[in-house]
Image 1 (cartoon, rainbow, N blue to C red):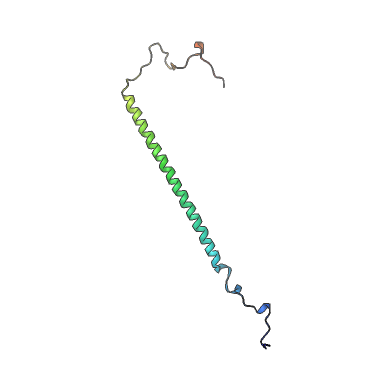
Image 2: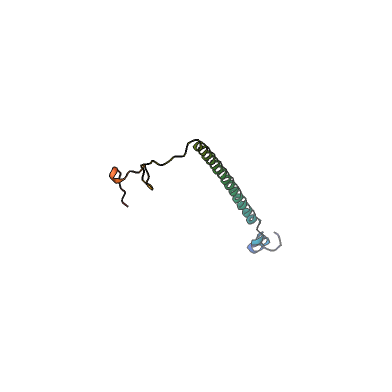
Length: 106
């Protein structure tokens, strides 16, 4: 038999006393991983937003081109004049109630 000291639970060597809570490398790695995931998500979100803004810009340009085209075609027509028998301040297209139009009650 060995004549050395008896081993007990209190004499077992562990790694627990070598690391403090602030020094835990697994926590730092976990934090880095979370940051990488957030960065990737935000990068993707930014790309999507940029594509959407580009689509909106293209549509605005299309609308402006169409407006310019329509204005150019309107320049070819002579200006319209009101009819001589039309009452001033009244739309010709809206019939009066006496002429068979209808009234809206609010």
